Image (cartoon, rainbow, N blue to C red; front, side, top):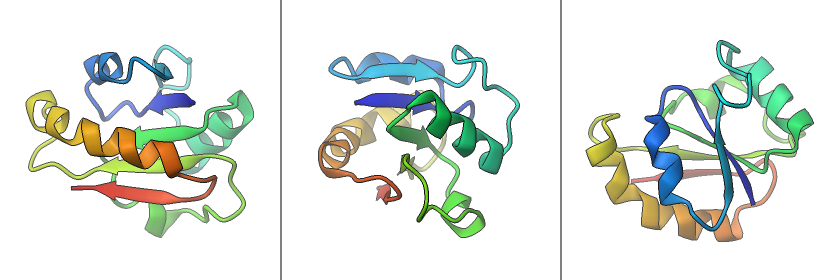
Length: 106
């Protein structure tokens, strides 16, 4: 599975998904793109899942026609120490997620 880590997520989290092709928005040269343009570029680049902490994306974007799915990490803060606790549940969600789906991990 090809994962894309949003720029609002600590880049070090990519190391916690060792069984996946995981890259950051910055490394993929997509930094600075806003949600709609980022999702379009990620679709074009062949990313399967966007990992983000932006809980508003599903309300702002029509995901029904997207090839990419979204995993939203809903921790108490956006700090790596809080997000690390959500990774096992995120990995489980990724195993069954489908294009256009949104999984909120709490």
